Image 1 (spheres, rainbow, N blue to C red):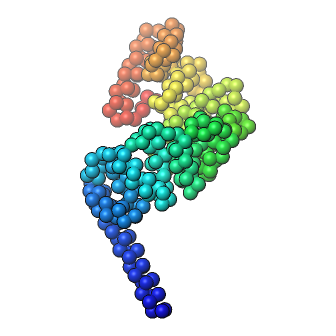
Image 2 (cartoon, rainbow, N blue to C red):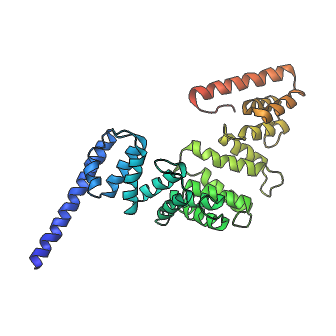
Image 3 (cartoon, rainbow, N blue to C red):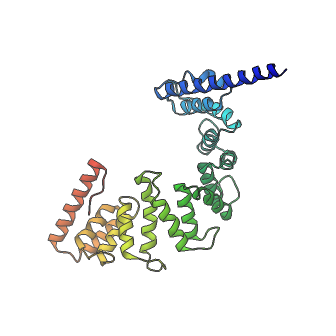
Length: 306
């Protein structure tokens, strides 16, 4: 009996090793643009293979034709086995109607399953859902709770969400210092690309530039806005700083340049307003700087206006 049991254990171990090797081979092939080896593994119930087959079908990659309905079918099989990645993918599928009818309640269901396994994407999406009331009854306290779980794991979006909660006072007592703490963590979070982090620097710039705020700091507002450009209203903040000499030496030409680069109705109004107190030479210099700045950005996607 003991001998038979040992044989069964060894057989299971060998089978597990074989499946692991099969998955690694399939994954290498998938990275080379071929999903074929995932198919038999997925049909045998391998959740990892089902997940990658789902990804391939959703986006038409790995040498397969895009078929979102079929992609959802494989993701569901993997998700029902507890595969976090597929649970998240199903959450997004139900938000955007990818291969299924849009259903925010079902989206929340799958994000919750991922979140309860500690997945930060699931936690963040529950935070958004409770903040907006999308698929659930709006509940700012629950929203903060999920962002907190994500933020404490070092997730950028969790940190950003928590910063916004403390800034607005939604689900927590409004606290600018705590808001600043989490926006700063997000801005310095190197797990995401520097371009993504610009959204956090923009939040910092807005907080530091608010003269009514207890954390008002003109020089820090300028520093953060420079790191946020060209996104959002960062150019308005810099233009206003140069216009009034707040945090930097007053410079009408540079203020005009930033207003001009911001564009839109507000940028145009501020540009035309400051032009009334500028000399023709200053306006010409401001226009030249704006052209050079835009030209450099279009070529290198690097903002070099300072």
